[in-house]
Image (cartoon, rainbow, N blue to C red; front, side, top):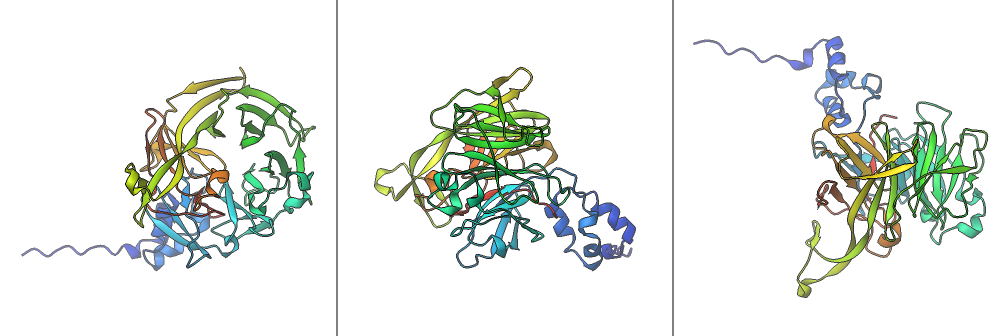
Length: 388
């Protein structure tokens, strides 16, 4: 009887070979799992051996849980894995995101900081009351003052970066550089409406307002507080605009409003309820998305129902895109969105109900997270996983 061949002991692979293997891993969740296999594998799963230049699919950072507000759970779309991480500095704060960093705003005092969720690194920012005409533009709740925050670069990689925020009750723009003691206002044309979103693209910040007007801001130029019109997207009465870079092109996406719907709660997730006798509560939802590709040279916005191999990620994060074919489980020509309707969800049980995956081609919407994760202060948001 032939002897069974002995199984190799993978923990005894040569150190140099393990490094070659681990450097080929693209998903950070697979990288973390690799390090838990055994002691020798853990020794090579370090920040230095991880290829941080590879593109990343954002994780869904879920809302705080009542029984443990110092931890956050992160849901991976690629493999369904949920990672739990201690982030005490984000406890009770509103969070936005840009290039893997959280921009946190205190619920009661309104203090602002940059916080890296996985390393714990923190950068204090000037208080919101250092913005121009703060007493006129301040919001009723301090944590709602900052609407969006976008970095020009990762603070871990470079010291010469800029942070631009949309702020106040009329959606103005301000920027901050390391070393500044207060925020600097970017002036807008009189006819430019409230800012809706901003993106860093080809060395400049581009912002879209609630009328679909796109303008450019050169905060590193000779006139850093001025901005100029570059394109106009079809205006829409009931919508929120997003602007993002994708595979070298600029896009504007219109989220076509919200409407009231009745839902039932089975304790695990919310689902639509059509039976009038079983209506238990009501909420809101996105109806549609419209996508426009921006030609900056021609100052033209072209509508499209085919974004190719792109997947957009929209919400309270800096709007971004990935090439879908590079990642398992990510659908091309789809929009992954989280609840960013601040004015609506603070009057309900919290944000987190208006989330899903939108098919740009046929207009259908499916859930991307089956559970219930709600918060009035910090609903689920997209966070790009990095090691800092």
